[in-house]
Image (cartoon, rainbow, N blue to C red; front, side, top):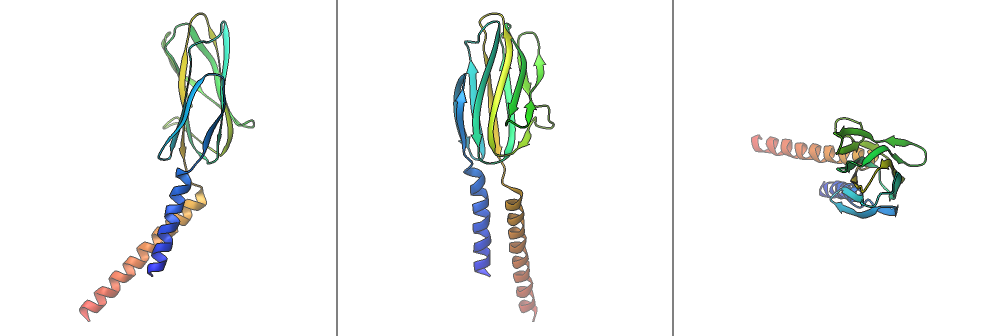
Length: 183
């Protein structure tokens, strides 16, 4: 029984390790990019540009992610001269559009429109974030790409079965002890 419990604990550890060891690599960036930075199962790539071209600009960053996850992306500016016209995350097959959440004439904030947390579950692969807009003077933009690594469904199933087996063995052991005590 002890060997079963150790095997199940090892399986659970490997499941969590696969999420924590997801690899995200920055491939190209036309802006000032920093990262990727990974803390736990969350990886973030920051980007910014203060030298936007006039009268219009197109900026992009391409990254590789080897594990599916929940993606959230923010795009912001606090410069009156900058007006975003579109922002898209694409894997070459599917486009995930970002939408304007706030625009008060100076500040713009764009994100996915996918409640409750403005995130999409997206698979492993190479993705390009393309940002387009107009600029009438000195302007800047900034934002982040955040990826929360999520283990594969089969790994979750194996982990749940393992926890169930551990619980069943503990319950069975408790019942044997109770019978011996009263016998």
